[in-house]
Length: 324
Image (cartoon, rainbow, N blue to C red; front, side, top):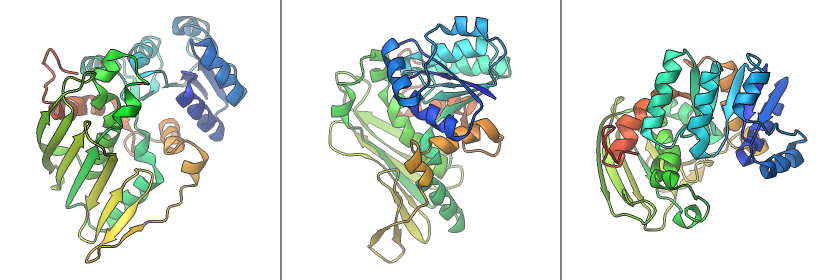
């Protein structure tokens, strides 16, 4: 197998270590920044090709079995579009796959027309904490309700992000990690009521988000986020026997029925300590398992979520001029 890895930045280094851990026979790394490529070489011993993707494909047409797109958010769309155009049939693209809903929709249509399989890299689905929680939810008869909070650490966001489109769509570009995980565990919403308020200079759409609904499985859910106030990401999920808490998401805590004690659940998190949490099993699934039995989310499913979840949570719809 020859895997094309696009993007030699920090996340690209993490992907490379995983591919090595999976003993992938050939890894071709492509980048544009000489500075990040030098850092990549220092960290991995592999020197990336500093070429445009069109040149790469002109020299290696048909040689790539799969591709991983690990570039900056604002470049995800253009890179993935080039991969589709050049005949790569199996692609894993970092979340959220593009900056806007319209770009996601365009990619999804292109992939369907050309029979290209594309999955979106929400690695938190593969945390050891999440895998153990999924098992326990089934064991305890399913969820009754769940709640999630995607309050952002604003003081860490603005100084590090320069692309206006990414900042304008921060709920999609970053908070979607938590939102995706919540509905992955709790089930897709059958009903969803959302309210927004406030604004920030760099995120005029809203700064406060609350909502509730019911999943297709019958679980009631609610959510909250306030980007003007302190807080952090977190999920709480309730069965008849337990309240499970993911805060931080890498850790699993449990409150038993008829008890106020919150105890940490011991996990086998060897892979999450050896590699970037969740990434090893995400890539292993992408390379080896059927999408029908994996926990990966396809681009087509992601496209549906953009329209049915992310946009409504912002008080928008797909046809709006100011939709994300």
